[in-house]
Structures are given as C-alpha cells and as structure tokens.
Length: 423
Ligand code: ARG
Image (tube, rainbow, N blue to C red; front, side, top):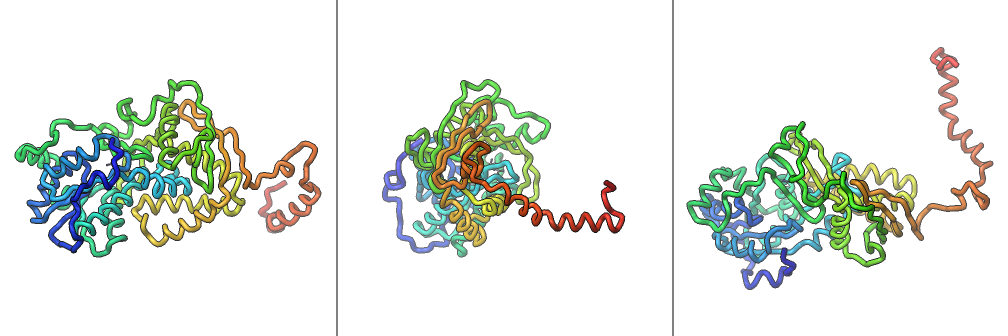
C-alpha cells in the first residue's frame, strides 16, 4: 500500500471548480464493479466520470495503480487520497472516546469510514465541478444510506446515484461489460465473501455465512490469528491523554500507529473476533463476522481508565449516551446536529481521562490488570481496609437510614394492606 500523499499522487488533474451538472464523482475502489461503473455511468447518463479513491486502510493495491486503472477505464479525472491518518484521528478516535459498539458488540468499522469517504467525494465534486456523486453500494445495505445522508448533510445541493441500485449494473452485466470493452481488470476472480476493511477493523458478509448455523471457517479471518492456539501472553501498557492513546510501552504513538500496533499485537492473540446477527437500518437482520483486534483492545483499556477517572453520575450517563452515539453513527447520522452535540459532551468528559492502563493479551482476550492515573478519583486511603483508612464509617449509619427511607415506608404499607412478604 502506498504512503504517497494527496499532493504527490494527483499531478495536475485539477480543474477549475465551476459547477458542472454533467459530471459525476464516483467512489472508486479499483475493483470490477466500480471499474465498469465508470463507463456504465457515462453510457447511461451521458455524463463525464471522475474517479475518487480514498485509502482508509483497505490494504491491497497501490493508490497510483488504482488511479491509473480509473483513467484506463475511461475516467476523465482520477483523484486518490491517503486518508489513513485522518481516518484514525478524526473518525476512529471519536469512536474510541465513545467506546462505540453498535448493539453492544460491533465497533462500527464500515460505519466510520463512510462519512470520511463521503467528505472526500464532496471535496472532489467541488474541485472538479460535479453535481452528482455515485457509489458502488447495493440497495440492501447500510452503506448506501451512510454515503448519501453524509453527502447531502454536507452538500444539500448534491444528487446521489448508485449504478448497482439505480442503473441495473448487476454482477453479470459488469463481467460482460468488462470483457466486451477489454477493461484492465480481472473478471474471473470471485471472492465468496463481501469484505470491507479499514484501519479500525474488517467486516465479512455473505456466502455460506448467510446460513446462520454455519460456523466461520479459517479463511474468513485475516486480522486475527486463531485464539485457541495463542502464543505466549503479551503484556503492554497504554498511556492515555484526554482519552486518546499517546504511547504504548512508553513509545509515543500517533492515533494511527496506536491502532496499527494494537491490531498487530492483539490480532496475534486472536483478540477481536465477532460473529453476530445484526439489525440493519433497512430492516434486514444479517449475519456479520468482524475482526477488530486493535479497536476492541483499545476500547477495553479506555473504559477501564474512565472507570478510574470519571465521576460516578457522569460515567453512568456517558454509558447510556455511548449506545445512542453508536446507534446514530451506525444509522448514517455522523454529520447530524445530535451527533455533534453529543461529541461536545463526550469531549468534556475526557478532560481527566489521563494515565496508564496495563493489559494482557492472550487467548482471544484483552484483560486489564493495572491502572494508574494522576487525575483519577480513586483514593487509596478512602478505599483501604488497612490502617490509614480516612473513610468515616460512622457516617454510613445515617446515610443508610435516609437512603432506605422510602423502601421502608413502602414495606410498612405493604404489611398494613396485607401485601407484605409474610415475614
Ligand atoms: N454490516 C456492517 C455495517 O453495516 C458492515 C458492512 C460492510 N460492507 C460490506 N460491503 N461488506 O456497518
């Protein structure tokens, strides 16, 4: 995968940004479907196509190769962006601060990348003067909703189309088209799964996984090794500042490096495999397999540090908000007013989330076994049962008296009215 920046990989492709209703910006992956979509959109709509490829850590081909292929397939412009740092800092880190897990389980891998890709699509549309944005999603999933709602939340004047959904570009049609036009793309290789992967994790669907009783086979996984044959335990220390991982084993890391290192180390221990049936926004229940070793280990560590540093009511409220935040992001509301307001709340809660978390990665589990914070609310002298105890136990008597008062009154009423527990 290339590390080339936006500037070096897009030589002189830019045009003046006058709005041109006859141009379409296409979210381009370099694969069969979107390669065919370039010419297909041209034929079906009469518009010129600009291909935009955004690297969020999909792995695979070099961005320059993808750019070249887009032009060979008939794109009038091809724009590629290495957005991995931006994705890690501006999309994965907010998800970490929110301990985001949709339906308590799924760390929003694909749901996080769509708003970022949408942002680059809108930027490219402005730059190259396009009035339409196209994407390769089908009409059955969440991703079509995330792309289009994100796009129109940023650019209300933009029109969205999906060639698969709106222009009858089925797989068979795509293969036939690619062969007839001798497009420089393989048509024979067919992956049995639909896979979407990025820095935060990997999503695997379809194929034999559609039978809920079928267990995932080994070939489904690539970010994680088999947790039943783990190597020796891996113990590490993650340092957080204001909720963000800033060092691992005392070595300073950027957000992207933190995720990548945790993916590698937690992945080697088989941490982060998920097999669930999830509720899609469009109403379908679907079988999903995910691997997100770094994300799940980081969330575990972050939650443990919040337990030390957040005030009790703030922590309780934040845990409720986290599940709503996750629902919103899953359901295409990344750029919504409510999500923005929630981010302000979350940012405020992270002020004192500083310190070290020690954890052991082993056998598919990431287990916290030590925490240390200069800004925590843990007070050893209050908590200790040894000498040095500063907690005034005598004040607990009065506290319990008042705390249990209403339950006591209710119990007395039950007895009076014949509904007592019979003791
Ligand atoms: N179900 C997940 C989501 O909606 C993953 C979607 C992944 N997309 C794919 N083409 N495999 O976020």
